[in-house]
Length: 255
Image 1 (tube, rainbow, N blue to C red):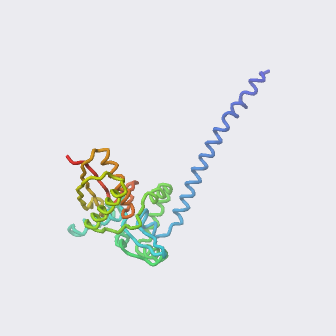
Image 2: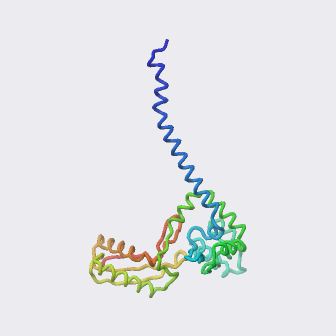
Image 3: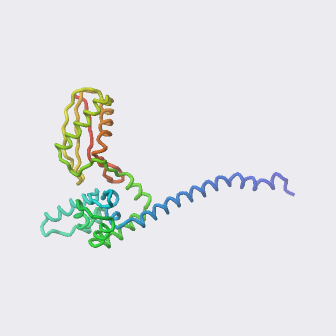
């Protein structure tokens, strides 16, 4: 006859494993709940947001919708411009799909438009690209949590203006830097400022190159403070799963 300790062995083992199993079950349920919640959000998105995902619209206080370029829209515009310059104006749709850059021409052309309401914006995009929007929603639903994360990455400062121009950016940086100096947030030293437009990814950004007589560590702090001070005028565009500020500060010491 088996001993009492041997008979109790399996039950003790199961008892020791049960908290681990419960923890895994709760964790799996939490992941499933989060994924389901994200999927519901994506499934209920207005059509215009699906078309302009993740950061191609600004919703005004009165419910109006302003359309702006996403990285994908800007990239698609470059492809279309290339096709328009080529002999015979070849269709680029298939090639763009292979490269993952396809956005219908009519959607790209909406950049800069303003609609009085979300419903009007949704009707407008469905009229010009209804089938593509259906496909696009299915793409987002394939990885809904990633789609939501991409949306949260982008941001826009309260004073941001689309493509303000080099002179306006230089003035903005100079004034922000003066405020930082007045508050003692950066070292008081002379500096040289150069602002260069950056069109490398379709949406125009600006590189603000500042040369100061400081060591590398102080230059890094100088850059971080000024980059933060420019947030109200800046916008972070989502590209390849990363947020990229359109106004980018670079600080280096004099040689």
